[in-house]
Length: 354
Image (cartoon, rainbow, N blue to C red; front, side, top):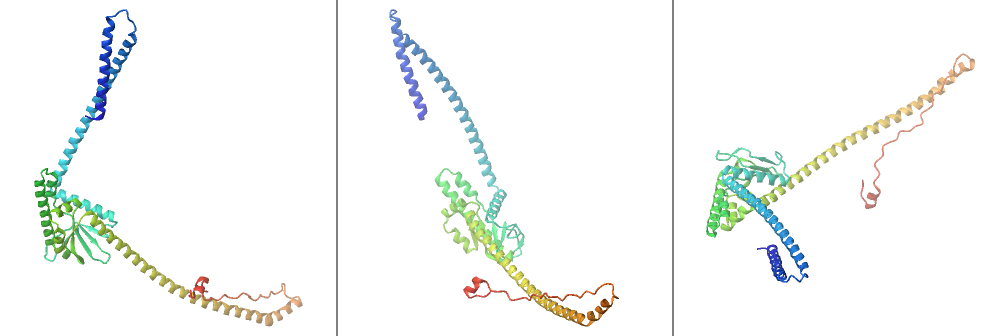
């Protein structure tokens, strides 16, 4: 019983006790017809009866609403139980477990910032050194060209049975089964020899466990499971550890792209500098040619004025020519020569050259 129900019961009890007391007083007053001073008591009793009736109606309404809410909660609980049972049944199916692991792996890769077909490839086919065909869930390419193979198909039927077990002994047994299943999968993954099918590849295979709880529970039963996998070139990784690994790979790819872009910028700068040097040579030669041309033009104008115009103006003096001859003016402009770039003021203060 909660505090609200207890308080309501006490209030109703107090009101009933008051009603009984007032009823006794009213009966006593009926045997004494001469006394009319109990009319306020009758009015109080009527008010109390109305108050009790309102409280009862409110209690009935609240009880009905509570029953309706409890029914809704019961339906939701039953539906949740049904959906949970359906999920557990689905996860017991091998291909469903594999697909769920692949989806978890894809989400981790996307969060890490890798690009499909550039930084990783999903389910590529290959042939190992024994001639057997293999198809891992993911192959991640490192910045140096090496490849890391990731497999996400992990058995965890024993883990589900351990979670559902109500007895501690049964739970411990199922956890042992789960650890053995994971250990057997490490052996099976090592036997596939994934690194020999994708060259150049890192000398290990990443076994992706789609939940941290799966690996933690297995390590409770077999603490040396990680070392067992390392000895067989199999690295067990949960979403958190794989995310850290893939983020490192993504960072190395970004650094590689930046370095490659810097090399391209340097090469473009070298080409541009060479072309500017060639253009500067052309400008120097063109300026020199223009200066020589203006010198020759001015010499020609001077010779024209001294030798030709002096004799031609005699026609103007004799009145034979209709119009006077105009003397071409000499060119006074000079061609600006290219000068070496002056060093920057700050660079001059530092003693460096531009």
